[in-house]
Length: 130
Image 1 (cartoon, rainbow, N blue to C red):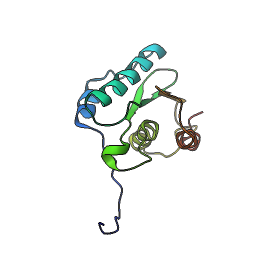
Image 2: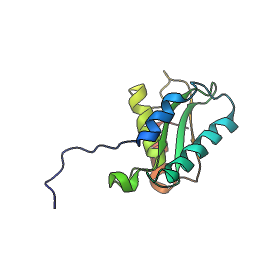
Image 3: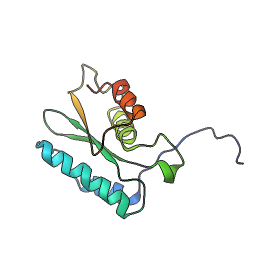
């Protein structure tokens, strides 16, 4: 058994970081947003870096991509590292707020490739996305 940990670090895979850097800033078409999420879910399995789940946080009106996430449960040994929570957490970090529903921000949406579990559903509500 290892000593008591004092921090939690959730990482994204190398391919993910490279692919995110190549993405357009805006995906105005909802179908394009879903295609992107499906691409990330497929890539996560093909690269053997997590389960077949992905999610993206977008500004609802403009389609601006705020953050992507993929399932990282097994590689990070963290049962809460679901794609939705990864995407929400990365969006919160990027925007420097826990409240993605803040009146100071544009309205956001979470695009997923599967129905969120109870934990992720709760995380969506707590994130401020409506």
